[in-house]
Each structure stands twice: as structure tokens, then as C-alpha cells.
Image 1: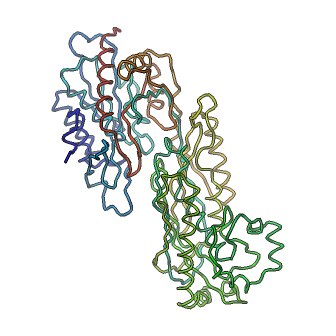
Image 2: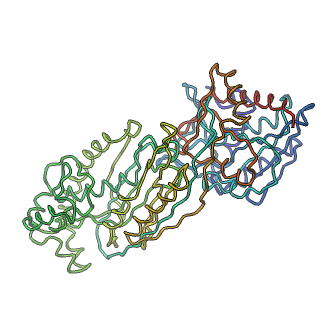
Length: 569
């Protein structure tokens, strides 16, 4: 059975294996930083760590090339900690287990692999260790906490690095060159809500099985966002219990003239009768409360909402703790006007709630199929389940307002780049949501290659939250990396790439955050480029690196260093 220890080039894979054995999620990088410092000492190379956690290792030029312009090899040491729901793994303590697949890919076992950017860091270490290479003066820069705010790049000080050229080792498609990237800003939103005492059996409504992925590179693929899918399920569930299954119906939208007209005719008894109606397709794009002009016989009570984790990962899982408040015919939700004690009494008999839950569980399977049809094929694993949970003693009194705000917030691709077909200009990822008993906290990552469009998107999102009675904060704002397609470094990589692959490598920008643009603020004279091997599924447990592309990536880098060694200052 092939393992990582059998792979070539051996030195690169040995270093990558060492990195997989050191827990290194963002903000927990002390051990991996110390490993790099110790390795530099073992190699006899001077190394230094700055106040931001960046490490610089210098390697003198190979003999005869001391006067060549300096080159900086840049990678980051942290990784995104994501795992499947059924995987037991502590990213702060446990090593990553790697698997060599028969189809030529290396993956982890139910977790992120850390090839982003562990392969880049391992390649830089391999260059430092290889005494046979012909190269100019080198500086290997290992930055800190890239995945959560690019902290190291933000803290990089001027005059700490001497090179003319910076080669970033953090892109993920073999044979392609990146010379520009999007900027970004972290958005944090808080929407306060009131609570109301209730006493109901609790049920956990879970959405999982989605592909997820990188919130920049994968945002154009239209993958499902588990938080927004869950919001849609909650809305559709209330409509189902109101007997409003089916296609979009204007009368199902609260406040519409159609809803008001229908409300004057519909009775609570009619709504009760609809609870056991045959299951149809899910309702679409309507409010949680459904047609509240006639109080529902069964009201979905929301006690908690949680989903997502990392700002730069498309959420794959989300869950809500809910209950069902059942009213008798002719007494629709009368218990709510009577207070909390009556609410408990109005929760329905055990038999009626059991029948209701069975109906809902069957209906969720129908809804699951409906939603799958609207998602890309890689989201075919979508699962929606309802299982017993802790008793509910408090509900979100303002649940419709909170869910409406989540529904209304921009998410996904906002604008495409006019000058580069197929490239996203502006996007946002609704990355995480969490209730704390007083407010719902929302985290988003906004990206754009145009600072003005990024600012406009931030204002629009703040407007939605303000209308919902909430507040917004923005932090870690950074500009994109503006392409310079005619630089000497780009021409060199195009020329050597043609030698490597028999064709000119495509040169483009990416809709993701690279550290180049941030670092260049203090080093405007740098010429920069980024390249790497093929990595898929970054920021998700599906992350994988194509094994044979790593060798070609390393060979291409060595070829470019040999060429750069011939250049004179």
C-alpha cells in the first residue's frame, strides 16, 4: 500500500508529512513556527521571527550568483480546520492522517488536508535544504494566520526583506500563473432579539451533506450555503404546517394584499385541518410565519440557530432547535395570548405531537429532493433531518425578523469582472451564524477586486442589518493585488512554463485573497507572481492534492530559480 513516504520528490513530501504531524490551525501556530526555526538552525541558515509571527529564513546564493537580485519564496504555515460531522478530531492536538488514493490524489481522513498551504511551505523548505540547486540569494518567508485575516501579511514591516522578486506558492491549479487577486473585508453583524418563555419538547433540525468549499475560488460554482438552506427549510416548514405547500403564492407572503384578503376568509379550523394534508413540493421564497393574518394551528417555535464556522469556507452544516406549538381547532394560538403557562398546555397531546413529527419527517424527505434539484451535482449529498433534542424553555420572540434578515443578506456572486470573462469581481460569503440568547451573530467575508464595489456591498449589507434592528462592524480590510502582466518575472515564468508544458501557461487573476497585495504596501518595488500544484476542495474535508503535479511544480520552481540566478543587479 502506497503511503506519503513513497512519494516523489521525496524531500518535498517528507517536509509536508512533518507539517501534517504538527497541529497548526490559525492562531495555534507556535509549534509549527518553532519547527521551521529549528529546521533552519539544523540547516545552518539564519532565521528570525517577527512580532506578527512571520518567519524569515535566508539562504546565500549558490557560488557565482551572489550579485543576482534576491528572490523571496512565500507561503503560510496555518491551515483551515474543517472536519466531517462524524469525525472525531481535535485540530489543536491531533495530527492529520493522510491517504494516497489509487487515482493519484493525496487526501486526509475526514478532515482538511492542509495542502493549502502546507505544500507551498514544504516546497520552500525543500529549496532551503537542497544544496545542489543553482539559485540567487533567497529569503523564505513563512507568514502567520493567513486563513483568518492574513494577520502575518498585515503585520509585515518594511525593510525586513531584501528581495526584488516575490514568488507566492499558494495557488491551486497546475500550469497556471496568478498575477492578481481580490481584496476583502470581514463583516460582523449583530441582530438583537427578545425571548419568550415556553415549555416544549425540543427537536433539532439539521442541514448537512453539502460540499462547501473555498469562499473565493468556489463561490462562482453556486454551491449550497447550509445556513441559507436551513432558513429556507424553516420558512417552508411553517408554510407546510399552514397548508400552504406548493409553488410560489402571493397570498403566502405576509402583508401582501392577497394575504390580507385571504385572511378575512380563512379560519383557524381550516388551518388545523391542513396539518395532515398530503405532502407536496416545498414553498419558495416566503416568510417563516406564512399567512399570519389567520393564526397558524401549529406554529414552529425557534429556540436556537447555529451554522458555519470559518469566514472563508462556504458553510456545509447548520442546525436549529425548534418546537411545535399546537392549538386546538377554533382556539388557534389562543394560548400565546394567555402567557407561558398556557403555551405549555397548548403544546398538544403526546400522540398529536408524535403524529405531527412523523408527518414533518416524511415531508422533509420530499423537501430534500426538491432542494437537491436546485443545487449543483456536488451538493447531491444534501441531508435534512429532524431528531429529538433538549427541551425548549425559551423561544426567539423575533424569529421572523431574524430569519428575514438572513434571507435578505447578499450572498454569493455579486458582480462579474467585465474585462476578464469568467472572473468574479465582487462576492460575499454568509459564513457563520450563532445565537447567544440575546442576539444572533453573523459573520461574512466580502471580496472584491474593486475597492469601491467592496465598499458598496458592505453598505448594502449594513442596510439590511440596520432594517432588522442590528449593528454592523467591519475589520481586516485589505486591497487586492493589481496585475502587472508585463513584468520581467511574469515573462520569465511564461517562458519557462512553455518549456515545461509545451504551451504558454495561462496568466490570470483569482477571486481569492492572496497575501501579495497586502505585503506590497510596504514593498511597492516587488515584482510578484503566484503558482502551485493542483489542489481541490480547499477549506473542506474533501481537500486533495494531485500527487504528480507537486513534482512538476517543484521542477518549475527550480528552473525559474536557475534562470533568475543568471540575472545581474
